[in-house]
Image (cartoon, rainbow, N blue to C red; front, side, top):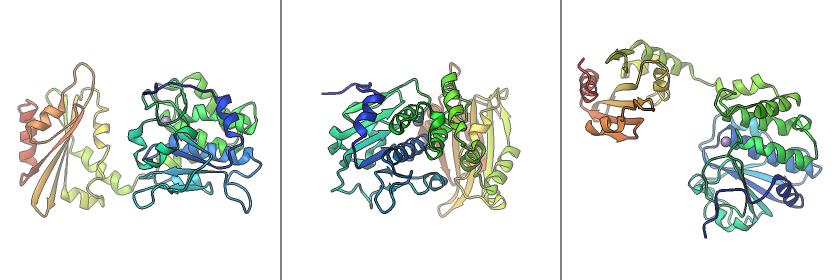
Length: 356
Ligand SMILES: [Mn+2]
């Protein structure tokens, strides 16, 4: 029987159900982001505090809750997790077979595809599992109890109410700072630091309440967003310098050669995200990155395509396929072995129907 992707419980019921639980495991989606880490850490700390311990647990006694993660982990995650009990799960460290907690919580996801690292262990926990999520889609059979609020900007927005109930405070402004900090992190990152369309009065009021507890906005912003390597910026400077526009400025091309990576002190692969910046040019519909590198098989020029959506969508998957590559309609690539950058550029422009 398939179960619907919808709530079948409330925050009050979840809080009441969690109260007597002595051991709780919290899981979230693989490659956890600020909301995934924030929601799991906040609940783990709230559970310990609700039972009379510190955020990290009880002196001489194990923590009541532990958060499990499947990587890769963001570089800053330990600065946020600090002394909260965590466990990294991977193929060498699977979920401990004998580990049968009183309760399992699945936060910020409800999709089996994002929880693959926990199976089959998680299947066996179904009847003692509760999930809290804000995504539009998920699998109803992940947990017996589900609270799905698609209007929430972040899982942390929902979880803030749970933490307040567990600890017994009326307002998020009265939460302990150890709980407020990860909640703020989740809300800030899932709203793109209060820039995305999910920003509304309710989430801004919650963020303001969390700041009342003493959360330092700038410290978290710096920790998460200001971690760029100087070499990557030098590489970006070289890429921007190469910018050329074609077809009435609708096609933008940037180019990087082996020499650019060496001069910048950057590794191939550090050009990720450059095309997002090129796409911010108003007239540009298709952005292309050409990368010429020397490999064991000789010179190779890699082509990455990104296109803007909407009615004027250029299907770059088709373009890439015509060049022997492929991908998706808005993100695709191809690879030319034994072809220099200038020849690759000519082939790309021809494929795009542009006469240079
Ligand atoms: Mn989220």
